[in-house]
Image (cartoon, rainbow, N blue to C red; front, side, top):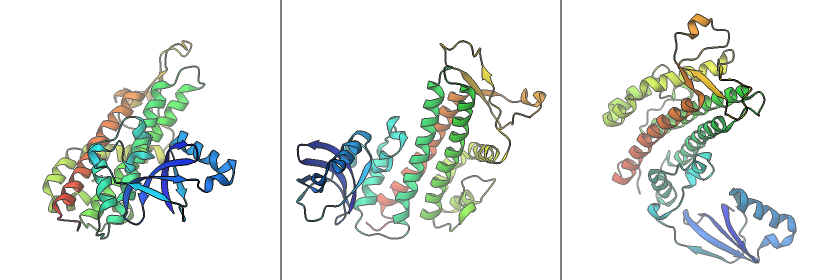
Length: 309
């Protein structure tokens, strides 16, 4: 069995890309006169997979399978770590993720927690993709959608929750790689929640300093996430006339979380940000933190100071 994506269907030949289970390498392969000829439904599934670019679980069995060598990271168009994420649809496919993807599937010696790191990275890119999606939905909504400001608020809240999910996945990588040993709620980059960064300072001062630059923002988003999960709905007032359907409706987000029943004089004390710009700034921060964690992981792998390869 293997998970693979369908690249093309030509006559009776289906071309796929997946992971060779015997060598653990990315490969391209073709199946000729395969099991899909059993019926139209199987072929329809393959065609749907081709159009939607999803993974299929393929049974190879005794069919002839021809493998091509894996391409090096700099020559590959994508990474399996971003393949299922909307982040890739928005053009996010950095080289450091392609390099990590390459190492994680081609390393010949495995030690814990290597097998978990791929899942954490998938989770991080998945959640980052959800923030990309929220931004795109917010910026493309028109006033023809009723009530648009309610839908925008939905996507703002989704982006905040997904942002925290991405940070938690990156925290899990740091916790495992540096053997901190925190469990559950203590696996957190937010210093208002955990002393994880304090432990990193002892083990890798450079990594700590890079993450320290984002400490205030991480704490802010952690607080924001707690608010939108546990408090009454977030205040996101619409801006401009709702009668003018030719222009997108603008919605503002408070710089710190405020509910709709917060007194007006208190609401005037905070700055207000356009919802689309709020998500864009969130994406930029997450990309920076993602790169810090992943490049550090790459350094450890390449220097062979953490993983035996």
